[in-house]
Amino acid sequence: MSLVLNDVTVSRGVGPVISNVSLEIKPGEVVTLVGPNGAGKTSLLESLSGVIRPSSGSITMDDVDITKLSRRKRSRTGLQHVEQGRMIFPSLTVLENLRLTAHSKADIEAAISLFPELEKRMNSATVLLSGGEQQMVVLARAFAAKPKYLLLDEMSLGLAPVVFMRLLPIIQQIAQTGVGVLLVEQFAHLALKIASDSMVITSGHVSYHGDPKKLLDNEELLRKSYMG
Ligand SMILES: Nc1ncnc2c1ncn2[C@@H]1O[C@H](COP(=O)(O)OP(=O)(O)O)[C@@H](O)[C@H]1O
Ligand SMILES: [Mg+2]
Image 1 (cartoon, rainbow, N blue to C red):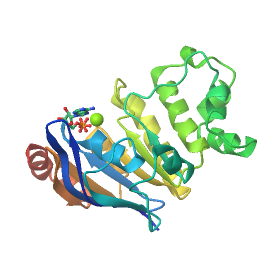
Image 2: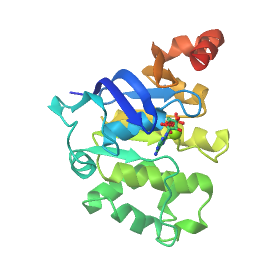
Image 3: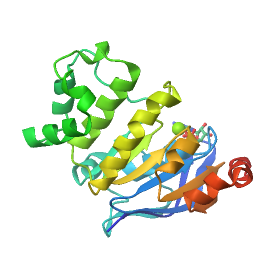
Image 4: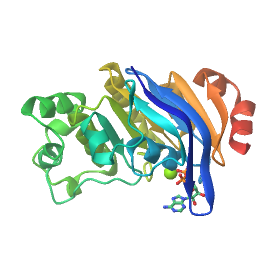
């Protein structure tokens, strides 16, 4: 049981933007993916969720080959992708945003229980919430869909580190419910802290794959991995 990227190459326009990348995300674990701008992180997530087809390699989810499945089918079988820059629907209330993905009242309640801060704001228009709270709604909405695997692309964009720090324990809790999480983050140090596996990609190539603690303990290695 896991979400697996097998030797995947993704090409866009001029050529490959990720080359021969393999990665496994197991239920209940957080895998953190970091790398400089333009490294191919978003493209990697897009190949997993079906936004873009790999030019070679395959993707399996719980031993089923999903490489050729549409994005919609992948999402129905339990793959949620929170895209970079994904926002809430501002004119809708928090509850209405959750109803967009939840299948039942119980799913909504399960999502709210992870976000006590949202509970008293359920009937507020999301546009009135702070940036951090809006990202909580984005996360709650993805969790309400009851994913088996959750891909999170730079949720902290535009947020202060201190705001993102409030999201981290929630992401950890989501994983503890059995969801496999692939976390892409600009705040590498914070995101590596909650990971059990990590990968650095640079110019589409894997420059490090392994224990996140090793990266955290070794600034030199982290810097080298970033430089390629
Ligand atoms: N829709 C697109 N069409 C063509 N090239 C793209 C597209 N999206 C991204 N790229 C290119 O692919 C490379 C990887 O980008 P991306 O996956 O967004 O990296 P990251 O998320 O790590 O910043 C970059 O060189 C970028 O310019
Ligand atoms: Mg990106």
